Length: 430
View 1: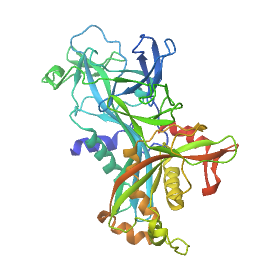
View 2: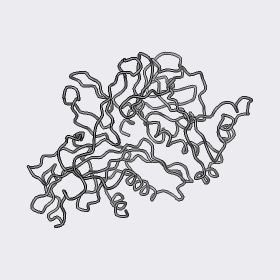
View 3: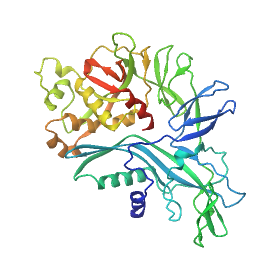
View 4: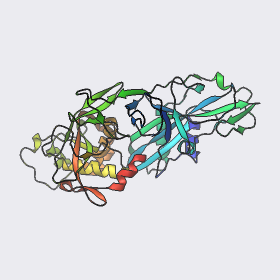
């Protein structure tokens, strides 16, 4: 286990401290007509430019990709797995919350003579989806995604001031990328460049004797017809939630079907509105009394005089339902949770322009304990007992909030919130 951690730490191509991460490009074929297409890594809704059939892509666990290769005819060709991890890591220390964007690849099987990471190949080359029909010998991953996550977290912890009270991953995405290799005359060859990587392999190395075989991957294509009315569901290419403009409902893929999501919007004034999605979460909190708006005023030491009726107003966490830079993500969580929007909500999807939902409910839940550390005062006393606090979500609603559009920003003036337009654009790489 120590060897695996050391490899991650010393690998210069593992972008642990990356300011920027990248989407990979995937070659794809329409499941209806077979026409070729190029997808981004985050694309889920696929519309064929030839037959116009729309499909939603999903898998049981992780997407699996294959690097292109041009190996000679050989029985020794094998495919080596790498885990790719993208996401934001937040760490609570005494001085505040540290955050980093991570984009890293690492061996899923411990073989010392195989390159420890993919380097920049996953960004420079067009990948292909792996299906059960893909021919070749695929090594079975020995290291789980949880192990890689733990190693990355431990490595980041080395540079943090101690103690670290809490760490969480938000917006994380795991995938498996297989790189091609083959052996010839006792040497190991890179099947992309057809160049030797190792002049002499260990005599006892036989790739086909390792655990592996046919790839364990099935891409599912879900019909994008509304389960309620049969209308075409709409959404951006990277959206994890689709909406029906006919019956004004929202749908999220669950296994092989779409499940309705409780959604509403806050009406705005004027034209040119742009609605951004947020998760409103009601939770059971152990370790601190925070169930009502009155409790929030007290624990956050807000400069307000308690009013009658505030104890009956439920407390909600608010988090973005879209990916955005870590510092902005935290600021939005804190600002909206302190504001507790309580205007009358309309129980369907707005007709104005909306931003796509790109952050899963499960990922938003990971931020709740972190949000508490930005709310509760005195902060230092609270974070020292953070390990005794638990937050369990009980009710979730997707709420669209109305932002006005100006030259550079999206503005929600009633809650004094603004978001730079470029920040939303850059978020597609997170």
